[in-house]
Length: 80
Image (cartoon, rainbow, N blue to C red; front, side, top):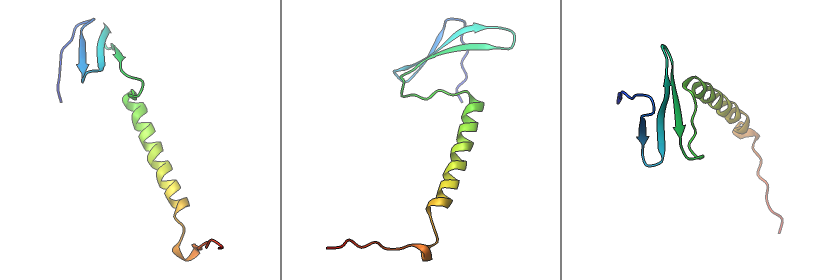
């Protein structure tokens, strides 16, 4: 993990197109501004963890629904 110190209005650049700027500091809070392309997903850590858990849950549930027992599969043949 890289640890950096920044003052208000100083920035950190990630790659060529992501900028993180320190907007304000208080006793127990840091406000950051993030400038990134629309394609970059930006989530708070706790939101990311909830989304990840729900996505995994949905994937497991859909896998159960999509994959039937092999004995229940049928083959459809095209008529010529």
